[in-house]
Length: 242
Image 1 (cartoon, rainbow, N blue to C red):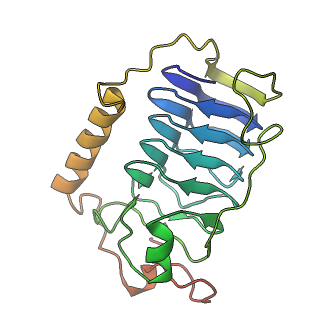
Image 2: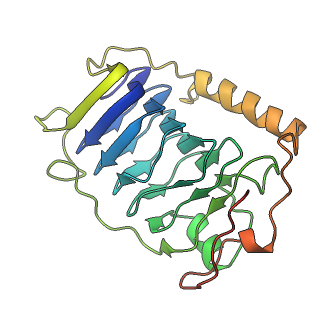
């Protein structure tokens, strides 16, 4: 899926995306709303938002490479969510994770690149490329207690070096009230002169401005001592926001 507005959009779906290369889509690589999503061994790169989930569990999002997007993951859930294991979310321009909404996200067992890995090892609380409660107290918190200090090779089809023009065997399926996939390569990507997706940038700026202007709107307190990102191997349990 390349060079479209949205690579894959799905609403209220049983959606499975496996061994797929999703690249150069202007607004979203994958955008799922109220879905039961499985996403394994995918390469999601050079999109506006790599993977955007609204009211969608991400526990079966695993061993994906999410890199080179404006934002790697954007999560908008009302309930606490756990991200699957083995993902590499690194090198995304603005944020590796942009958390929208009051629910926490547990994101253990992944590789986050720099500067996030060094900050985690140094027990930095407010991670530069993670947008969450540390940036606005009305939001949930991204909780990372265990992480990888280096990335491992993730195989997509034959390899991550698969020629986008070559034959490939991706698996995308869904039972849904609405599933849209784009594969023609002829869609408009809405990128500005600097190569940054203008539709995405306007949306992100508006949301961030709103949250910064309305701290505590949902009645939540700021992060406490039990919500810190912990050093790898520590047994201290993650804080769960009531």
